[in-house]
Every structure is written in structure tokens, then in C-alpha cells.
Image (cartoon, rainbow, N blue to C red):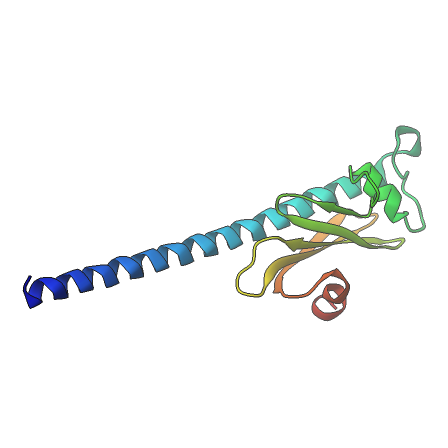
Length: 154
């Protein structure tokens, strides 16, 4: 084999290796973005169910537009977060927690499962009652639920 042929083989191996590395990076970025979108969609769905629970009369299993804070366990049970911890739920997209409930707001925190480096997507969704408005903030974080609320969303 000539020097030129060996050089072409080495060059081909380098190009194929670079193409594979770029493809893996693109796949990982897409998976992370998809997880972030799924996290936001799930949180929006849970927030909509909370508004429904707030507005549904007590005689039909809802909260009946209370003037004080709704118990987090009751909210969780209504939106289908049954089990030992009705204040949290895991889905394919991530893990969610009902972080707070006051007379006028309910807060949901969500952490995605996809990692990009050391960070994962996170969402904080605030439902304002009685209006039923929903506000969501998406970030990238390397923290857990407890430090998430106090460091990134205040």
C-alpha cells in the first residue's frame, strides 16, 4: 500500500469518527429539548386540573372555590397523584411536586429526567386563584426540589 492510500484511510476514519460524534451530540440535544417540552406540557396539564378542582363544587368532588388554602394532599388526590405521596408524581418526562398551596396560589415544581452535562430541565408552575391563570418558568438546574424553589425562582 502506498503512502497516499494509507493517508486516505486515516483521513476517512477521522471524518467518520467526527460525523459519529456530531450525530451523538445532536441526538443528546434533541432528547434534552424534548424532555424540557414534555416537562412543561405535563406541568400545564396538572395546573389545568388544579383550576378544575378549585372550580368544581364540593358536591361533585371538587374544592368548591374555598377562601383558604386547599390541602396539598386533596389537590394531589383529585389530579390523580394517588399512593403514599399524593403531593408528588413521577412521569416519563420527570418528577413533579406540589410545593405550596395558599389561599390564592398553588405551586408545582418539576424536574426533568434528561441530563445535559450536570444539568436537567426544571419548571415552576404557579396557578393563581380564583382567576385560574397559569404562569410557568423553565430553567436548567443541577439542584433538587428543596434548593430549586429557593435559589432559582424567587
